[in-house]
Length: 264
Ligand code: 13P
Image 1 (cartoon, rainbow, N blue to C red):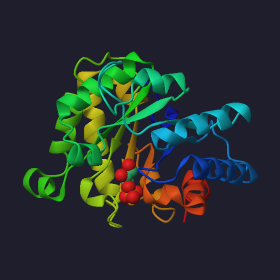
Image 2: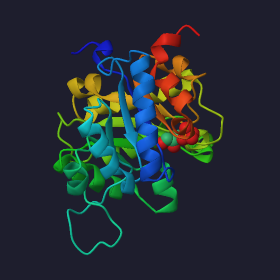
Image 3: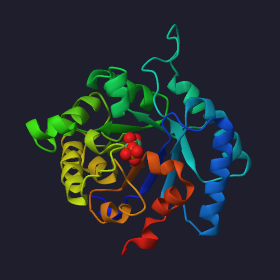
C-alpha cells in the first residue's frame, strides 16, 4: 500500500460563473508570475483551474505557448459524447483542449440543475471514457447534517457516483459541505478529516486499497489563506477546491503556497 504522503497535494480554483476569457488570460498570467516569483514547485503542490467553458481555449493557448505547469478543466460535462443536446459540452471537447480534470456533481449543479446521483455517475463514466480525471463533488446540506449525521450523505453520494468505475481509475473526490460553500463558515479541520476518512474507507470498499491510498480527497467550502494550513495538516485531506478565494490572486497564491505557512 502506498504511503499516505505519496499523494501530491492538489489546490484547485473553481471560478464558477466569473471571469470572461480576457480576464482569464490576465489572471492566469499574473498567477503564474506570482508563483514563479515565489519559486513554487508544481510537482510539490499541483495547481488546477476550472474556468467557465468559454475561457478554456484561451487558457489552453496560454498554457501551451508558455509551457505553464498549471492544469485546468471544465466545471461540468455532458453524460453524452455528441448529438442533439443543446447547451451541453462533451468530454471529448474538453479533452481536445488538453483539459486534465473536470468537476462533476458540484452542489450548485445538483441544486440548480437537478443533477441526481445517477446523473453524476453517468458523467463520471463519461469523463473517464474521454481520459479526463473526474473531480467528484459530494457534500451534505445543513438539514442532512442534522438528520443523518456528518458522513452518511456524502458517502452515499460517492457510492452511487462510483458505480461501474474500474478499481484503478484516476479520480479525485471533493468533500464540499453545502452549508460551508460561500457562507464564510468553513467546516473545522476535524470535521473535514472525519468525512474524508469515511470517503477513503468507501474507496477501499468499492474500488481497492490501492485506489483508496492513491486518490486525493479535497475539502471545499470557505477555504481561505487563513484556514488552509489547518485542513492540510489532516491526514486524509489532500487539497482544496476553492471558490470565492480563487478569484483573488493574493489569496489563491497564498493557498497554493500553504506549506510556507503550515505553522501559522
Ligand atoms: P467557496 O470557497 O466560495 O465557499 O466555494 C467552494 C466551492 O463551491 C468550490 O467548488
